[in-house]
Image (cartoon, rainbow, N blue to C red; front, side):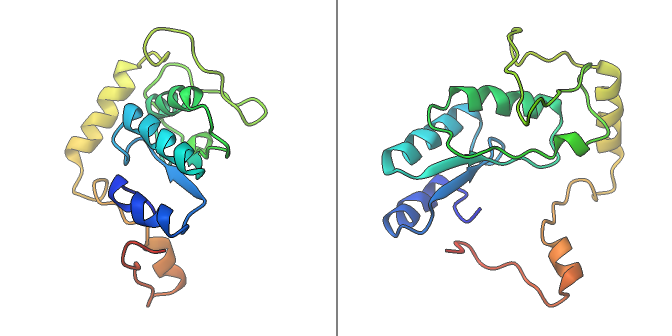
Length: 155
């Protein structure tokens, strides 16, 4: 994920530094902005995929909906969802042959379990800060304590 903002696109694309952009609707500004990113990638002949991390079913539903609207989503989307043990929707998504069916219910097509949502919200409110701090480099530092995050852009 060396191109993670619209500001980085011009230089990365003109230098032919990337062939596939790994989008994430949380970081690219939502569903509409993800569609805009797809259009820009299509115009420049750059591939598009979608990335996820430890999302809940609401986020996966949103990702599924936007993926269904992108005409040239040429690369498989990733998901860590199957490994999640908690969720706030009443029925977990089910992958069949590596795919999800786009729900046809109104909105995102999921129903919230308000009790689970309240419990996770309470955990967030009671957090001492460990849930709020994202450190994607922690695993790298376990393998190599001297490892530091490279400056961006990394291409």
